[in-house]
Length: 360
Image (cartoon, rainbow, N blue to C red):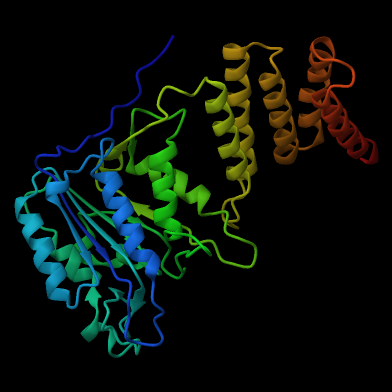
């Protein structure tokens, strides 16, 4: 029996507005230029206003290197006065803190001295205050360092926050990438979609995915730990259509789901020790779906069953791995040639887990 997924809240393009801000150049030597910011903003705006997006180009304001807080706040106030559906604010640039410990969005003339930050920057508090108005939903996407400090802003109480980094963390700027880490992952999600996801990609789904993909920061760097805070049902707000909807049981969809499960296992977060078990559960579902869709002895199914067994061993120990691998060996032997690489790989895995069992 199939059940209909919970429907997303799809904003009305006719009554929704967005203001997107990118700051690329900075006069202060302590704030390096961010050429990736403009590309990030333009690509995101194009995606959100494209055929699969939920915003209208006519109601989407793009600002590059605004020279004063007033320039941003005026644009935001105008959008807020007109928006009745969703009001969305996006900032990509440097996040800075003043001596008061609050979040500020750096502008081209921002001075890095904490004592001067409040005077020369755009305060997050003023942004959220300007988002008041008739809009049913208010959303802020913050792609900057320390973006999680926005959670502490009183004026953000009625704003859905999706922040690239936690209060004390820096946002990622990948080497040789066109976009920033946070926005780049957002764009990838909008491009590739979620095979086992609903028809639309909502904010809760986006955060769930970003917490995994951005949690796999290179060794030697601190994962940014993107954070989210919902307001009532704001997590159900859709930003774009899911291009992979309906592909969960296709070979490509099954492979994408398995790849994401491996990413879940690779999250480096000391406060999330459950990630390997979560990955094993995801792979169990993928392997089961593959058996139903492709057949028990299909090569794709056999490979996914092996992946599930290996992850179960990582998460739950050698007995869990052996309980899955031993019957799988029989199925592979019945379906594959004795020298088939899939069967040989499984037997190597079996030898590994049996050796661990013997040592115990």
